[in-house]
Image 1 (cartoon, helix red, strand yellow):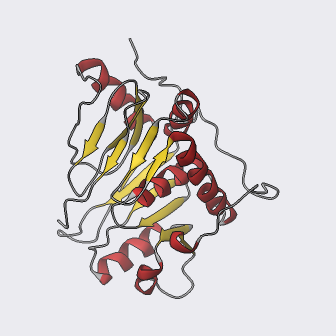
Image 2 (cartoon, one colour):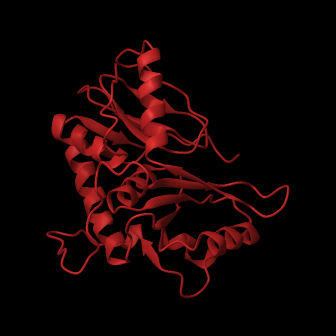
Length: 239
């Protein structure tokens, strides 16, 4: 029997969690703590900025950020805007970063001011540590929001290291993580407060009454509906 609503995409599953536990702690790093309602507003503000850059179905949103709450917010915002997040590593050599950006051609890249020098002039950027809070975003003229049952659209893209040649993008639709997590949660006897180490790129899903913590430099983050559950984001250092 399904644990998740496998007809909804990752962004919709997150929104359901916001509605269920708005005041529960949702996300924390070493500097910041957000409730689900606060996190939802941060995601909405950034998603609006991304849509103003033309992000829509299957648009790629590059994410070049340190492991932090902002990293999760950027990924969730890319999904809410209808696009897919493109995994970019701070440790990429300049040549690799250039190759990935030229091949993937993201609509926009989310980053910090300190990383702007890594991009060619003219690259569309959203600089999150300079972003002003949006009070009531206007949606006129922006792409329509995604259909939450469209599980075949892209959720995220990760590139190979290119050690055997040119880096290759691996595209992942929403359907893959939704079904994967639903199966895992059916098979795993996880309890509130349990923590699961992850060694895959960041993906988002929702599981009732569980608490998860990521330990590796590549992260898998899972939301929760228990009031005491939250996303803990810790960086274990460079690979």
